[in-house]
Image (tube, rainbow, N blue to C red; front, side):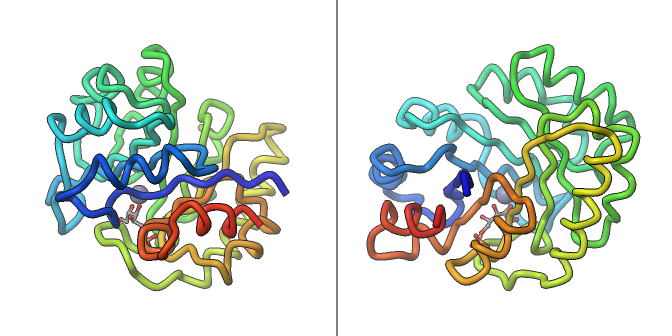
Length: 215
Ligand code: DX5
Ligand code: ZN
C-alpha cells in the first residue's frame, strides 16, 4: 500500500524547530504538516507567517498547510507565497468554498478541504470534483495528542462512495490520533495521506516511526 505520511510539526520542540525539521528531512516522510490556528476557529493559537517562513527555509519536504482559521480567503495569497504546496481550508470556515479552492489552485498549490468530526462528508458532493484533497479530521481540531474518533471509518467509507459516484480520486488525508495500530486500518479504508504528530515526534526515532506508519 502506497500511503504517504505528513509529520505534524505541532508536536515538535518549538525551541529547536530546525533540528526537528532536519529529522523529517532525512526521513521517508512525504510532506511536513503545518497547523495554523487562530484562537477563533479553534480554541488554540499556534503560529503565524514569520514562523512559517522560517520553517520553509529549513524544510526539504513540501509543506502541507492546514488552516484552522476563520476567513481563510483573506490569507490564501500569503500562505501560498510563504511556500505551501498543499493549502487546506475548513469547510466550516468557508461560505464560498468553490471560489476559495479555485483561488488556491490559481496560486499553484493543491487545494484541500477539511471536515470537522461532526460535519457529514455528503456536503462535499458538489465540490469533490474540484478539490485536490479531502482532509477528514479524526479528532476535534485544536490540539495534538488526542484520541482517534472511531466513527471516522464509517465516514471514510461514505467518502469513497462520493468519490466513486463523481469518478474522481482526490488525496484522502486523515489528521488526529493516527498511530501504529490504526494506520494499517486507515490505509485499508482508502486513506492516502496520514498526518501524525505525537506518533512521529514522540518516538525515540522519528524516521523509524515514519517508516512504520507507511507499513
Ligand atoms: C490538530 C492538528 C493536528 C495535530 C495532530 O488540530 O490539526 O495536525 O498536530 O496531532 P496528533 O497526531 O498528535 O493527534
Ligand atoms: Zn492538522
